Length: 155
Figure 1 (tube, one colour):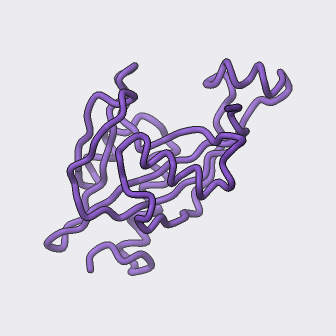
Figure 2 (figure 1 turned 120 degrees about the vertical axis):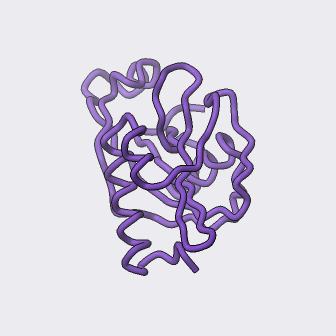
Figure 3 (figure 1 turned 135 degrees about the vertical axis):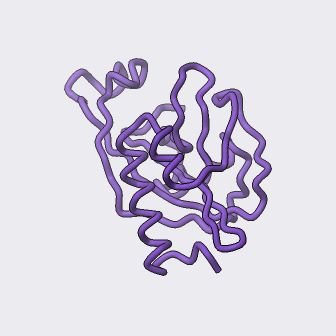
């Protein structure tokens, strides 16, 4: 499978007793805490399908869960993807990262080997732990949409 020229970010969240928690993932190959992130594959039918596949592969979140697109969009430098960059060509310097959220009811996740652990945390803890600005921006958007009632996070 060839890697497509885009990345997805998925933020799992859970609401209980009026409190919202976000799930962070600690990568196995670094000290980074992040949300579910992964690359598109040429075989994926859409960016939406890529996000559903990634949340299933990395955390065993049911693909029928209500995946919500966010407006947050960033560019990721292609030096992060050495093998794919060889396929894309040296003139491909950045790819877009599309953001999504998914509300989960069961907080027990099954991780892929990509992650060493996960943690359900509040907004402030997530902001402090997250390594990447794109993750913090998408989290801020989601948190604001929940607080404004645009996304039902507390119901």
